Image 1 (cartoon, rainbow, N blue to C red):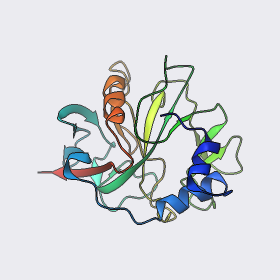
Image 2 (image 1 turned 180 degrees about the vertical axis):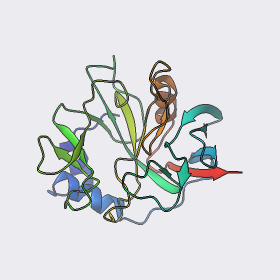
Image 3 (image 1 turned 90 degrees about the vertical axis):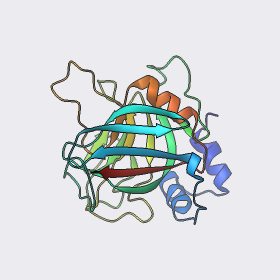
Image 4 (image 1 turned 135 degrees about the vertical axis):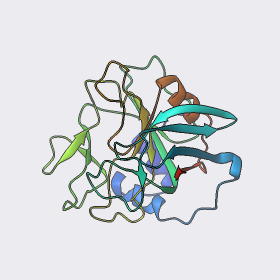
Amino acid sequence: MEFTRRSFLTCLGGTLGYGVGRRAMANTPAKPAAASNIIRVRAKSKAIQGTVTFAGHTYDCMVGQHGIATPKFEGDGCTPAGLFHMREVRYRADRLAAAPQSGLPVFKSKPTDGWCDDPEDVAYNRVVTLPYQSDAEPMWRDDHLYDVLGVIGYNDAPVVSGSGSAIFFHVMRPPTDDHQYTTGCVSLKIEDVLAVLASCTPSTMIDIRAVP
């Protein structure tokens, strides 16, 4: 199901701004997901390549330049270890023939969308509109990494300054790039991203762990 920001806020039951609405949702206690509804990400310690297992399938994935770690800090190149909610899906309507299928809220990205990665800004680890007063990562990229992505609910309930931002489940870099690791996200081939997101529900969680 595809959501507009207006319809999503209506579902939240208020006239709150989008960022505030996300905080309200993020801070609502959630029931633990069933074992079958957990996306499992596994990689060896300090490795950049691992696997994603979900809904009876296993896929190859890439993680951060310095592997999976906890605690995580802004700019450390690590993918955070832990159990997190999957929040929403974002996609480029100009790049995908149709909106991705998912039980999560689905939003169309806009050329002015950004994600604040300035720990000193009040909108840290939130969606912002570009141009923005502080550092913010463009969500409308020249490459294909963010053609479709799932937002991982890391450091958003509450947001802790400097603990990391913009942790996504996104499209893998092509083999022709000089590297395939991420800056802290989890990446897969686009068809695998779409397959995983299609099986997500509002209670889906993602479990990211380094293994021996």
